Length: 527
Image (cartoon, rainbow, N blue to C red; front, side):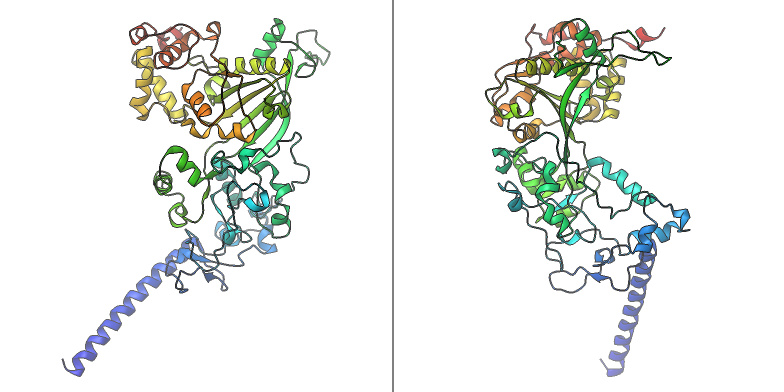
């Protein structure tokens, strides 16, 4: 090849490269217009070879905190219209750096705060940090966001300008009014894997990390006290079946008439309780071990089947903690909380999975509310005998299939002949599985409370019973809902469960008997 031909070829290649570069720049400019330009001081998080990546999504400003002027537009006291900011301007103020889609363990500046799950001391264990605020983002040691599914509402509040993303909560008067002290299980990385056992003590045990290091560390558990008022328990007390002892069961103050005068009508009772709200914080190696799968499979499934919401589940294998966008659990304690970890005291337990239709609105197609009310009464009686009662309420609506799926199953049942022999099959036809609650994680909360044995368990669920016993907590007695408390239309559910092998203290039911148990049809309710 002549020198002229070679030169021509080189020039052509350079021209093609220039066009390609211009095309890439145009795409980059379009992307920047969409997500916002970084400030001039923005620096890339680099890869292992310390050279900047080409992906604009991996650029991070090391000082991307909002200025005082910018923060004014997002403070709760102001609105966008006060400063005539457009959405584009607010977006630039909130997120001055380019979009950070994911990170990698060996990128420059990435140094997760040390976290040793199951360490016996909080200073050794370390705080859970999932915040993407500039003060914490490079030291994140957890994926996801606080508040579970409610994290989406927090994001909306920030976008709308009603919440300052850098707001620092004042936890000075929020400490638990009743102590839940450390238990041996807290330092066992295999006993508690689905939430942070130190979650209610964060402002106290991680004060240095928050105040001195400026890290965004938040409580994932809150403990408080309350009174419970239920009309069903009012009626039980009115009939004399529940003692008004003035300590656990209190007489409600007299009611008021419309004119404000005191009424002589029966005002019912109130129940004193201690309670704790517990958000999920998953230790992924422990979760995988609990379910008998590999951590890599767990991470891949969580990434793929949440629409790819959390790419760092794949790119950050060094981060072992994940805050999933699911509902929390609530603990209700009747009697002295210290009795929970005192083996000499009687303990009555109900583990209850959410059912909004029955628990709140009284739907009679299932036994959820009757079970819940009966269990609360049994917990009260246990506490009045000198023991303690415990109800753990999990947000697992519709066997963790969700309320929409549950209602679709209701429609199928009522249109297809609501007989007990079709009960579980109806769910499988819609959802592909009859139950997704997977009780393997449920006992964690019992170990958190220091429970070592259960005297009475109000439940017919073998899955719950087996999960608790297999976790090392013996159950001395179990009993189900008394026959007279079962609503007629929920007989289908009860008989199907008994035939499927659920615990019962009553009659046995065969598969042949199930066709005889039929629920109410829609036509019977149309008048």
